Length: 418
Image 1 (cartoon, rainbow, N blue to C red):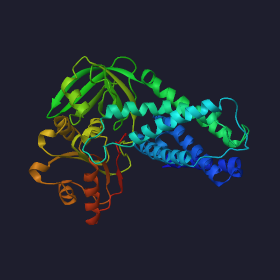
Image 2: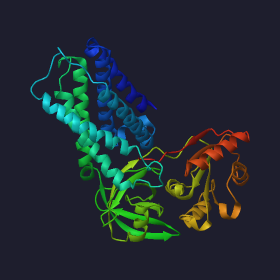
Image 3: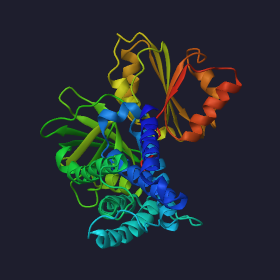
Image 4: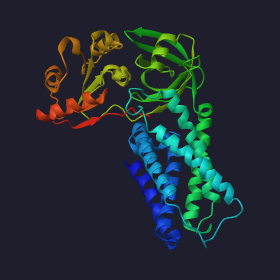
């Protein structure tokens, strides 16, 4: 995507600017400086991406892919920090900065070890050689401290001795990203107060391990499109931690609904404790998983709670629909169906919309052959929107390919934010 390419180009520019600024110092010193400069810009860019800039979402193909770039850039920064640490630059006889140099050295020590630990921890979801998975709330809180470490590294970058003066293009370039990085970090700390909308829970419908939660805006409503997701938290003990959830429905006055499956620690607490009247904070909306108005035959394939974005899309369909749309919901047990009655009513209301509930307990494992047999239009040449476990998507697309069925497009989001 364009956004990812732009990130890498900015890193390449840093490398190129380091050549005239420091290549005269010798290969090892220049290599160390080039590594530290590129790492610094990578960290600054990651601070910017952490603000979840909606205006740049399209350049990355969605917030999920922006986060994937964020993660990759973090790995690059970590590797280059290690290069800079182990390849010590030699500044003997070179231009030095002022008396803040000693403080800059101390800042580097604090920033280096903090970043080393925090970035490494942020890249680990499961503890190696164990079954222990790092809880999201611990991961999230530790991730916030990367910004603090970046501030120390910024101080080091600006006041440590270096073999080029402030007029060098590299110096100006690094100063620019210092401002971007620090400003982005400060913004992420203020964002909860600036970007969240206040909502009140109006209904909680619990259905076989999942809950359909509806809320109305208390003040200004959130702007969203069917298929997008929002980051929500409940102002209640144990539920204050923000988590992303797909918007399952919207109404004309800005009301929102979320279908949440009790599958993790937080979602179980949410399922058990959320109640009518609870205050909800909502931030967003994000995502590029939107209705495809160009495809004449559309398969919406959902796995489990992955039906959520399709609930919002189906809600907005009417008889002006010119495309054939089939929502195929694959669940383990039929009791796991979410808002099934509303979908069946929509089938009665909209001529070109169909809904199929597939229970693997009753009908066996879903494969491409069963899918094509059940869908009432020709899948070859149709488009597919998918939301659910990645193994299901891969199995179906591979199976269709083996059958000689070629989809015109396959749209999905990654939904992996750490």
